[in-house]
Length: 254
Image 1 (cartoon, rainbow, N blue to C red):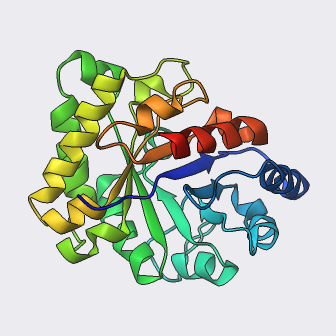
Image 2: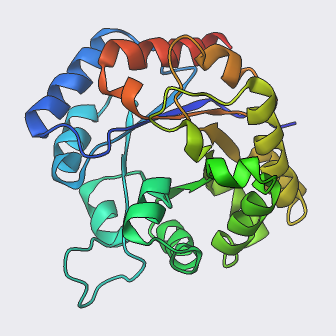
């Protein structure tokens, strides 16, 4: 098995202006997180991306956007392309978050175009997949994950799988305080890796899979210690530098 360095991504959603972004990064760095052992990515809103990139420079912390359009340019009012993000110095981009799917109509069809567009621009796609509470209760978790993974990565070659990060989001655990049990998290992440192994054993082994449902300092180490969980996409707990540093440290110890 390849050595997959843990990755912790802070998804700030629609929080933090430029000044607050700089304050967070400076405070987080001051807490001396183990950046040699854990890859850290912060995902601020579009208006704070440039402030994040400049403040993170030289620290080892990477910056990701929360969305992008699949086209390089064009008449798409309000959208941002992968090339524009790359020009800012952004390293990665979150794609297909459950809130984008549910609230803004993000489709598997558009994601099948966005993922390769991000790769072409030199960005790391952090692709989110996951099931709702109704889908889990109905025994459809495996079906939902399989459909999303296959559709969203339909235009990605097996050789490019290692460049992608997948975040498993049990949607029923986002912002609810609920967390998937270690058994549930491992089962879902293991299924995702097995699906990808059907395309490339090497790519599936190298690709990192994050857990994205209410990860906190109290449960981060247990989750990251699972065989197929390689880090976390952290929401609310990532807004506080001390909490996020504690999560990063937990991942390192795991």
